[in-house]
Image (cartoon, rainbow, N blue to C red; front, side, top):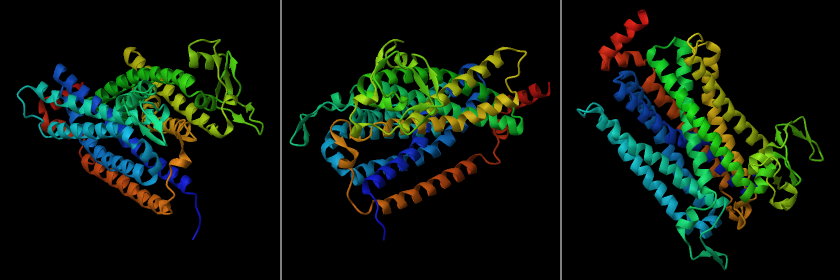
Length: 454
């Protein structure tokens, strides 16, 4: 027998679940947008390459949705099992968005089934495309509702506290708390960005390995174009989020930026290390940039970590999570811009191997950025599970069986990951797009072969 801290194990179990779920949730929100866009372009241009893109992306998407359902259900279960004190006082406040998130998922799943099995059933293809809109709306609204729960945990409102219980609950006010606009914008835009980067990375890798056809080149151009667009939106969302933190959660911004003392014209600290006296060393300093990031003014005063009680300060290592997330975001923006520039300049080769490898790397990096962002968001709220009202230690279970739950859920996620990989391989292995194009759209396949010969 051995002893363990139930609070630490509860946090570890939740972290493991969220990290695993974030992969499938992000894909579930972002891929429908690309599917819908590809099919619409195919209809408008009468280009079967884009229609086939939508078909094949949808097949892979259904597998990830199935895994996402299991991990999402696990999160709901764990809220009650390992955070019982939190659910006891806040359950009636977050019940509405949790229910609406479930409703949004069912809405998405119903129309996904209809969309998946009605290809070629309409005389006018635009009618089939219209079925993709509810799938996009369902996935995005699912992200919206669940993010409002997280927003509420950061800036709780919409209730009165009497005798240790929440009363006079206004669920709409709780949902639309100060954190909701920036968090929702950031989550949705980054999900769209990540899905585009993953699909772009796959297309780039296939071109590198197999010297892909026009189908893969069109896929790459479409996904990189959308990656560039969503990278800009995500950068805007990140800027808004920083200004939100400066106003509502200054301790998180200060810890994330290693800003220890309140001062005007504050520098932005990028990477670096801390010595034993919490002095920053080996860092890149951008003069006055933190003041601008926090308040839109290079000379504005930024609150330091010294104004937060020591027992309410987040851990300082979240600085690296923030820097890694932002660095990858700028990488995605830069590499997508570079590809589009190469595409426009006829003398330059957008399919140069170095550029393709950089795009292929964008896929896994974008998912890492999502994970780093969530770690920064959640650990940066420490020690609060409900900021200002309940700490993580107060909300966690005291059950001695948390370690056993951790092992069981870890085994479940291993099985799900292996099953997902096997299912995706079965769907696409030895079934290249070229053969499916020739089978479904023989005229397009013949024209493509002729173009490639010439």
